[in-house]
Length: 237
Image (cartoon, rainbow, N blue to C red):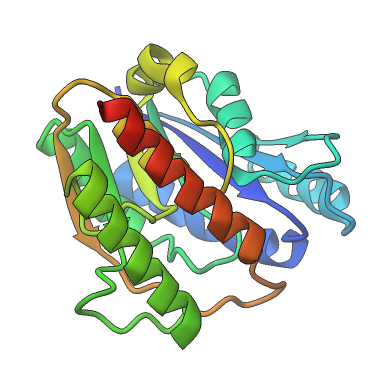
């Protein structure tokens, strides 16, 4: 039985969701998924996301919208809320801004199932590949953070900063009490909170330019990421 829960944390992405959901539906047909749910976890947007989802649900009944009323925006907490609401054993996380091209889902899913992985990561491979969705400054900071993670916590993937990945829900269930649960990089939190040896595979992707809206990355998020890395390093010992 092919089943997949897709969790998409969003903030003011109504225009992008209009384009993203039809593209996901094409992949659903290619993969021949028997069971699919797409959960939009909205951080209390100020756009017309409710109207957009109401219209889309008439055609895509598997689409669900959940709105977080918390004043503090937090991508990791949005993802965790999504994980708690999923029905299926395989979860895919992706952004709602079209920078994670949906066409890669097919390859990522096939690698995940056929190679019996715990994680398959849509890797930007920042050290080798051009990624047109990143500014030079953001790319530099991402590379520095990846080097820090690999040096302090161990090299488990080419892109521990990716927001595009498939994983087994059971990993979240086993480790949810250990999660840092804050910030904007839930993948690293899941991987480095687990004490088990994980089978992780990378699938190289092209990280596209954002179509609409603006990036949520800022200095405070960067500082949270650095704090997370060092807190996980201390916990190792």
